[in-house]
Image (tube, rainbow, N blue to C red; front, side, top):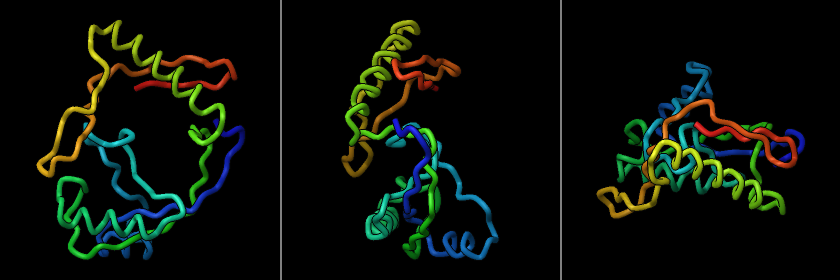
Length: 153
C-alpha cells in the first residue's frame, strides 16, 4: 500500500457533452458506475497517464453501449489530477501480499455466507467476460500485518 498520498494524472473517457459540462463546472461530479460487472467495483474509472486509452474506451463505449453509463455520441476525454490516498499498488513488492490477504478475507466471508467466490464466467453480448459480484455484506474489515485496514463490501 502507498504509505502516503501520491498524485497521478488520470483520464476518463466519456461523451463530449459530459466532458464539457465538467470542464465548464456545470456539473461537479461524474456519475459513479454501479454495475455488478464493473471491473474493479463501483466507482468512476480513470486511465493513469494515458489520454489515448481514455479516448479508446470512449470510442469502444460508443459502439458497445453496455460498457458506459450514458450514451456516447462524440467520444471525449477529461483529464484529472488525482490524489491516491490509501491505495493498493500491485507493482510494489507488498502489493501482491496485500492482495493475497484480501483474497483470504473474501474467501472467509464467502464461506461464512455459504456463497462461492465471484468468478469470471459471465459474458456480455460481445463475448467479453464480466465478473459478477455476489457478496453484499458490508462493514467487514481486518488489519493486515502492516496495520493498514482492508475493507470488503
